[in-house]
Length: 97
Image (tube, rainbow, N blue to C red; front, side, top):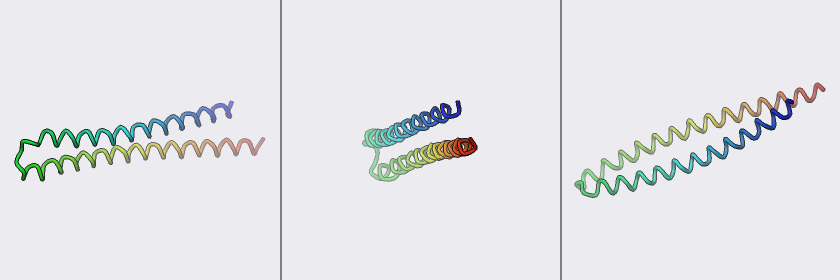
């Protein structure tokens, strides 16, 4: 029973790792796409505006994505810690048997 639940937990963590990797690459693609959109939209604005506005917007988006990524990494690490705690419990129970 407990070994099966540990295996299920291990599978869940591997699945979450794959999801995290996919979400990370999606976020990077979104940032690149937004950079291209800003360049297209601002092509008709003055040079002074072109130099300041898009950079600020891009940086703002970059910071938002960085925060989202950090939050995801924290959740991932929390789950990894939970997995390790469960593995410790499993090993302790196996030692007692």
